[in-house]
Image (cartoon, rainbow, N blue to C red; front, side):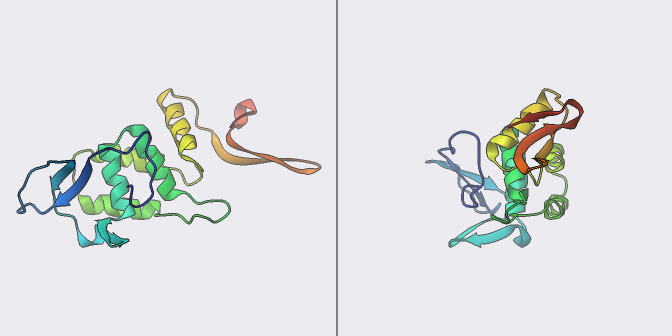
Length: 171
């Protein structure tokens, strides 16, 4: 997640998580946590000389391993379609579902599916993502995101959150 520039809530963990082949042996130690697991070639990419999981695979892995709030921050950033065109989306919902299907049955798959479903292409910052997740947790009605307001003079403002039924914005 760090290599891809995905956000997390709080500080990055001190320990680095790596995936090793099932026959490589060895234990986790000295700040390195090893996970014995086979990862399909389609889920691996090279970034700055490091072999890491692809963005879709990383999103799914973090949806299972990280807190719910961090998971939502990550999926929203990966899916973000910025209204100004930069940065480009890191993945699509379709790629997430393809990666999900390729993983087959896995521990945490329900939670990962819920994170994909809740992921949003218009949540423009990590704190907006945390706000949306907290709204969901307290069962607040889902707002419309990034709504522009104008009057006869032109553009007034863009609101991060808008509840049309109550004529209420949140920023």
